[in-house]
Length: 341
Image (tube, rainbow, N blue to C red):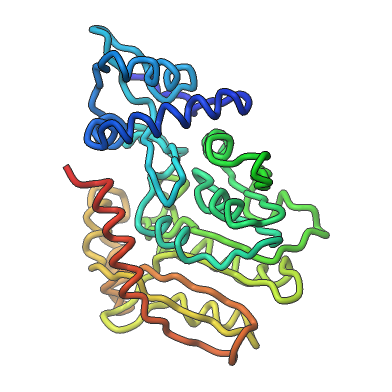
């Protein structure tokens, strides 16, 4: 079995500019060839114009030379609202896989309320895409926390590729640890962001760190919510994209957020919904599957909801459901562009 590729590495602003130019040039020359290489993991034999770009990308560990003069991808690369974001190949199926961009990251990047001068904390940093987008919007300080060394390395490379001191963009300060644990106790933030692990997983099942949400998918959410207010500055805000179980008409996470933020306005965007059977299908061969499935279905849980939540003090307190149909169509179009054959 082939060893997994190490995270990409970018050393200094000169290499960052070289790598970004190579990616942008390849994308502008042929989006189909860019997607074939970085999203569909097909080897690419470059023409004369493309070869210097591929050699620059090889120097950063984004591609690898192969026999016949071609190059093999070592990462996936996505283009989102001016950001170029590298994540793990889908073939990297270890627990520390750095998650590809999906609808939740697209929606969060496009929807987050980050203002110039904000101090921003992102928990479960992953590839760093949300933290990098916060810096691009003028945040004065951005801190990202993740338990995975591999995720922190990807986030470092992505930040180097997308952020510039010349433009006055704040670097992403990266801390390794579990949620709030590595933060100094006197830290406070204007915005706390999180796209937590949220997949329901049978007990005693090893699974990707980026997605293991416990038996009903809410283990991390239940740990985080009671602590958030203590890390917010006056007027601070909390934003989260997560998935949560429910039935055809309702989901479970809204009431948890309302309970954790008394006196706040809690805006809930129910972004998408799909049958819980799609999750069950991933675990049919795991020990304890039947009993786990039985416990969830006995509670009347039949759907998985994708939910974007914002808690803040502007406006009347309490729960407010927000219609996001137009924004969802825009996000779906971007995701389709990446994933189409």
